[in-house]
Every structure is written in structure tokens, then in C-alpha cells.
Amino acid sequence: MERARGLITSVLKPNATFVLIGAPKTPVIGPIGLLIKTRLATLRASQKFVFFIAQFNRTDMQVLKELIESGKVKPFVEKVYPMTRIADAMHHLGAGHAQGKIVVTMV
Image (cartoon, rainbow, N blue to C red):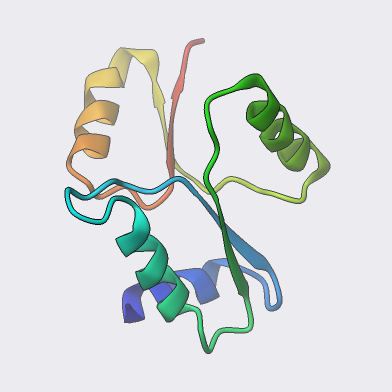
């Protein structure tokens, strides 16, 4: 939990909002475990924690698009890979070490 708190407080500005969109599913409690750990890690932080579980439908994707375009939500991109290194990107993601979004560029 200390690592999560350190990461959140070092990356975000004071009084910023950390928005968790989605979470890995565990066999017993689904994504709730990560939500609880992150919430506990941010209890004493000046940053606010909220989560957003989107459905893959047009309405939710439009809401996410508007939040990002308005600057209210800023995705944390951990690493960008060219399409020629997609195997490396998938390996990094599959290893469970990704701390942010992994982007694969197509140009």
C-alpha cells in the first residue's frame, strides 16, 4: 500500500483526483480488491480517489472521451511501443507490471 500511496502522491498534484478506470478481476472478489487497496492507500493523501467502471458501449465511451478532451481526466501513459514491438508490449502487459496505460502506435 505504501508503494501505491507513494506513486499516487508523487505523480498527482496536491488536491488532484485519481480516477481508476477498470481493474483486474480476481477469481473471488473481481476488481474490488484493487479498489479497496487503492482507497486505503489514499486515505491520508491530499488527493481524492474515485473509480469509474465503464461498459464498452457508445454512451460510456462518449463520456470518457469528453472527460479526456476537456482535461478533467488525464490518462497516465506508462510506455509507448511501435507496432513492430507489439510482442514486447503484450509481454509487458501480460507480466502484470504495468502501472499505467500501454500504447501501441500504428504509424
